[in-house]
Image 1 (cartoon, rainbow, N blue to C red):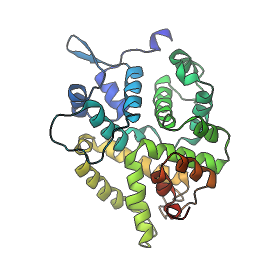
Image 2 (image 1 turned 180 degrees about the vertical axis):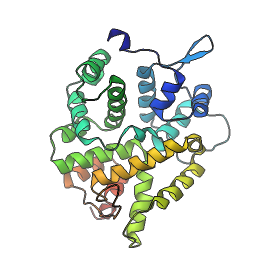
Image 3 (image 1 turned 135 degrees about the horizontal axis):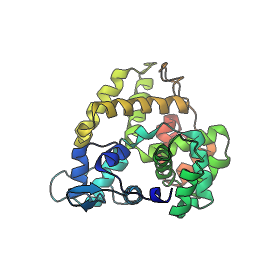
Length: 285
């Protein structure tokens, strides 16, 4: 197992890990700081470095939706816009609520601060009960990147809160991590509900995604299979959050955000997350 602790990964494995195309990978390497090592003509990657890079851009405090597309590109700003605002990393799974509780417990214990202990726990101990360590790595990495956007109190609410609080906190973390999910909820799901349209349709996602491509042209590099997977996961998130009954029954039923979850995000100036979970709360608190 030792040789797997932080092995080298190929370009194909990196594209699968981040759910991006080869063209996007090349652009991020040349202009946006994606960590890469060259062995002759071959490209090699370490996922520990990729995870740290993703965390660093997620932590960037100078994001701006109004940045110009012209002029020189600031690598950290541009990357943060595309990974944090519109990313396809949600292909790693839906809300993953039971797994998020496991990861929250590990983070409360500080396991994520020790790379060797983290990898031992995820791979050897297989706390997520996955069939392969690669699947466990991908899932654990996705959940950790989401939960790093919360803090210790948020992890504790996921670890020890009621089922309703846990679901809404995990949903909030997923929405912080993916602007794609957040915009879909606000611009499509709740907009249709306000118009008294009771159910979602596949076409709603198609129209929404086309608009997102206009906002962020890098989305056009995603393969059709990845776009389909992103759609499937987005609908799964709605079902797991209780917004629709299931992925086969897309009748929208608004949820009410709990007072503790609303207070958590309000105290951290994340009114957009409250609005995305329960738009009726905004302006009434």
